[in-house]
Length: 611
Image 1 (cartoon, helix red, strand yellow):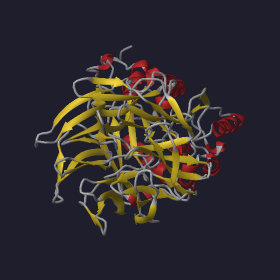
Image 2 (cartoon, one colour):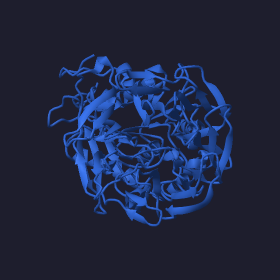
Image 3 (cartoon, rainbow, N blue to C red):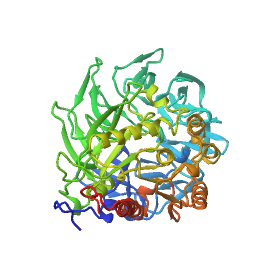
Image 4 (tube, rainbow, N blue to C red):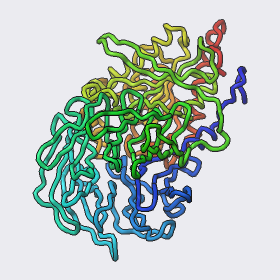
């Protein structure tokens, strides 16, 4: 099918098949390794290795899904050493002695943050009553022993010469609110002795510790609002280089690596400010130099090889790629090792976003990324889908999103909003949504929609809002008040913050407690515009029962929503095997609303591009 202006509609299959995800990039003894999640393979995740001169190959056993459920969001789910793959599956820790061979269970349990030490594997093990840092022997029959225990949470352990470093936070906190860096003397196969807290506390998030080649311990701290780099030289903690941006990612997962050490003494860092990422190098004298790259979004997984750094990068015109950047010269050389587009989308025409800034009453600005309909003229006018990112500490990302292109190729404009609480604007901004959830985030999305209406970019009756997870909660509250939205789509949505605080995995209970106190439970009686609810029946983050109860209440009031329940799908619908069905349902939902409005007001003309 083609639009009238000659733009080809992106098929559901293409939108899903193109959504290959790369994660957890790291350097190993014999190459680079990363996780590859392929939606067209049912969302399964494999470990892929790149070796110079050999290219890429899967090294995890065929059919084995490498995935960690630690802290509900995972992270650090594999490590490699001397031809052996250690990885986490659904029910425990596994070992494959030769790449691709059969895999053996080492221990049942919930593991993550896998790190190779001197002759042993270090990891975080999550129990019902708290976390442990454990050590596992690499040879012979694996023996596991506990090094440190806590009723709270641990980040990935980081061994150094004679030392062990880790992050920790209490069960009452989230790691982006109050996270501590600890060090202790430690020798392999020994015990942890005399632990000392170096940084972090109730008003400081200290994350991503790494031992530098100079023997100092580096970490990122937001003690001055932005996550910036600091070092501990054994005596004192000092700032490395002030940067107006986030030098670390909000730690939803374990084992992020937002910076790394080049062989020539420089530090390479991925920095986020607003929706944009950039790569910088910090010289030994503290000078910060930008690196000119074709990427505007960089995942927090940098892997250094000599004077080169491997990264997962993307831009509005390039889907995620694994690239190796040679930083030896002033003019960096980029070698693409893997790219997520399949052959059928090479050269496909895409919609590129523009940044929109709208000032609110308090004087601050709300930033949004506006994707016009594909191929639209400068004075475009179209139906608009306002997308609310999940988290809500996540952020809009300036990268090619094939599922957004699915809609823009059909004449819709897609608008991503960095509402209050998003990451990329400093600690104060990130914390400002606490106690205001369902209020200020809704206000920010509403004011962006109203701006587009007043600018003539769209018309009433063709403005929609959609969100997933916490973004689904925002979308629901947006249609539970008077406003510009003609319909909403809520995917894997949270409905009741108080109930969510009881059912959410323990990692996020503190988040639920801090966010609530704003709009409260979504009240069915307040919801009037048409509603589509999409939810996986196996969702453990936002349980399906809450959405089903809301649907029943709406039905009893005569405003039955559309409901799409996806059997055996978890919290991440967009990367599941049913992602295509969800996209089609969402598209049909908006078209149905517009068709109904056209029938009710036959004298009105639908905006160009709606079908």
